[in-house]
Length: 531
Ligand SMILES: Cc1cc2nc3c(=O)[nH]c(=O)nc-3n(C[C@H](O)[C@H](O)[C@H](O)COP(=O)(O)OP(=O)(O)OC[C@H]3O[C@@H](n4cnc5c(N)ncnc54)[C@H](O)[C@@H]3O)c2cc1C
Image 1 (tube, rainbow, N blue to C red):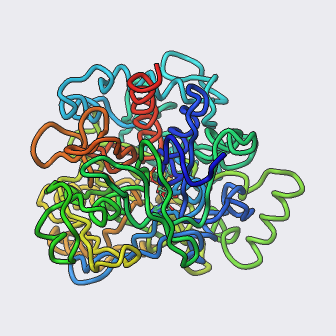
Image 2: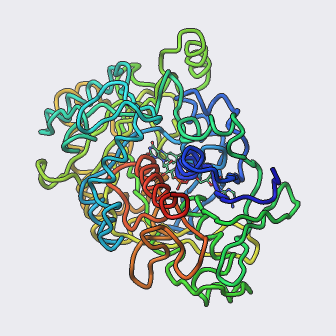
């Protein structure tokens, strides 16, 4: 095969890229190349389910992004840079979202039946290989492993009880009829190993030689003849070369996909001209509409040794790692986040506005353990944030860091829900089951009492849940970047298929929805060009 010429190039081997490449491999004769800026997924910490804590603590396999200042301070905004993308370093929580999320996508598509709730729900089921549930909401024949925790540690059992005492129902399956309640977490773990999108959908096609995977290939821009994409310009360890293709699919994620489009001359004309980039198509929506779930951590020390703080630090990690290698069980064999709650603090029976993972560690920034005392961090999340930000260029250099502004807590609604969530969480901590083990609130701390003080705390701590979406959104209006085929408006042979096309964020973690939207788009692509 001529390595420099393909039928389809897919930029990025993350959640979406792996789904598309796998589907094309199985359903076409196309010559396919996946170009990935990161390295192969050989690091054992990627595959040990609890290893992601170490990866994030060491800042390995990430694009080292930060945001522009948010309420006066910069927030870390790391994204996966390795085969598997975010799905090789994420926390593996498997969540689909609420029906209303997908109804918004359907409207944005111009009411295209492929984007209906029913079709997307069917797609989740088709992709799933669930080790516990097999009913109208779950599948067992797909390749994406989904499991429940194999046992719930004592501290998280107190959480299950405490939320029920507060008034939430026990919900065995938040991906079933309703999200409301307190539940065990479903995760993308199979056979005690992480099930990344690469493992689930692509690895077998790389190993068989059906698909070519080119790692450490960083795409600088898409090449055009007029407005028709003809290939890409890549940087391979400092050497620049061109690779041509009949069709180019951008699956570089919600930060890089708009950046690559802009460097290719597709974006807001004024911004491109500012950096001397020739405008191929003036598309004002590229890089706009960035949104993410803000995490607001509320944490407390607990009495005695409970949870996973000791297993997550120092000698504890070695002990947990050795146990994992010998018996394949213990703290390292799962994602360490075993229970979660969904609720609306204003009405416990309404559709949830808040998600809360109960992390049995003390963490100040989401997932990284801090200090040696046992504790619990309730990672509160505004599920449907209204704040919108942007990804803008900082330089004419395609490899320069972009300016990322998620605009955390930029709208009154997000602030209100954040305050409600913190106050509600404090009520949960007062319930009998939690009150008996909680020793002292760490964050926000007892000095923070009024709504104004809690609001200020929310603004100061809100940080990424690593769920950026929306920067190349699907739609029919002039700010839309892609149409219902996920083809870039005003171009030929160019597509964006990844989390950036979501018009609005889903009510939950974004990996499963990204994989579902990628399969919907891949099927449309094959129907149009290979049927
Ligand atoms: C730390 C962390 C924790 C998370 N936890 C969860 C969770 O528990 N559950 C959940 O559902 N979701 C979680 N997510 C989010 C989830 O992983 C993402 O929503 C999902 O991976 C997005 O998929 P994507 O295909 O849009 O992009 P990605 O998966 O990010 O893939 C993009 C790929 O493109 C590559 N790329 C980018 N630019 C270029 C370029 N110029 N040239 C070549 N390649 C390029 C990147 O290196 C990357 O491999 C988490 C994410 C992170 C980072």
